[in-house]
Length: 436
Ligand code: 4AD
Ligand code: MG
Image 1: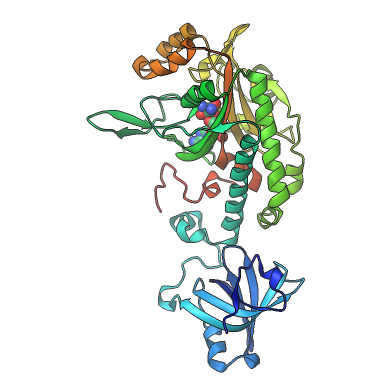
Image 2: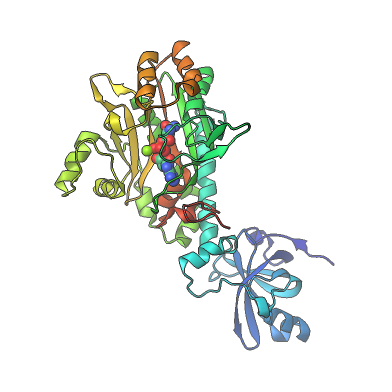
């Protein structure tokens, strides 16, 4: 008779029944006449119990000699046990070994400590650890929350291209690729410019996909390929951009707290820090931020962009994300609307996460005047031909508009309390890391 197949996360609905769970051997504790295989199946990890006196001898030996990460289908009776990590255990009655990992070529990641480079080289296997599992599930929740937020607030998803003919966020970190017939193309740094066309067609839109930057610096906050969600809204000003950014962050944090507590616990994340994330977020100007930095003995000059250390210093005094607006126009992208009363500052905003996680959102209001936009394109030495279509948006029914981009890995790193962005995505791409 074949027992019903189930998963570890569903085991609780089968208490007292004999079921089959396919998975992998995570680890095993042995004490003479009884062994405790830990089974993982992607939905969780469950302790199983195999007792020598209760099993045919060869079956007990087979279980006892299983090696780490061998693929196995366990059959046994589910029992509730308060002390068990997931609340349930299985009393093993049978095992089918799908593939036994041989001792001669044992699983390379053992429960002992490994260095980060070793783990990164084995990222394809490291993903099987409970910690990586928890991070991936928080990431999934963040992505779902992002989509739910925009889908339920009148935004239409319109995806933007990855091959582009020109830069969006400056020319210093562009990835160039050969396109056909000697044409050059660039991997997109941001979907924003196309998003603006989409917003003029549909009002409120968002795009959500991978973006690329040839970041030559090795920092814990930079990837060369990262995922960004970007809303864009017609008839929206800087204040509206800030309001949406704030509402989105509060929504995401709420969802993760509601649905991913076990994962946050596995990551030893202080949830009280996340519970403090409520509107309103503090809002300061770049001018004020420079004053705060001076009071903390930073040597920043008015006019310079903030580095990672400045961002950490700035967010120190706050238990929620900090919104900094009106950066010097000179350090920001060509498309930023200058403040009409003070053109040396731009109507842009950065949102800095607490606890030193740095900028998670960048955005603002875009130039809507055709002549000014053209001037800025020239000042930035951008190829005008490639931007004709973008200038068209200012010729045919131009309106004030704005939006922002949120980096998913930065957001996940903050929510999970990760030291480095490399764990926030399954296969990170960094200056010295293209494999696996
Ligand atoms: O501030 P950024 O450069 O803004 C833009 O690209 C705008 N065009 C977005 C828009 O208004 N539609 O990037 C936005 C966010 C940053 O706040 C950060 O979270 C993330 O993208 N980001 C990175 N994440 C990981 N690695 C990198 N190298 C990143 N660069 C930016
Ligand atoms: Mg930015």
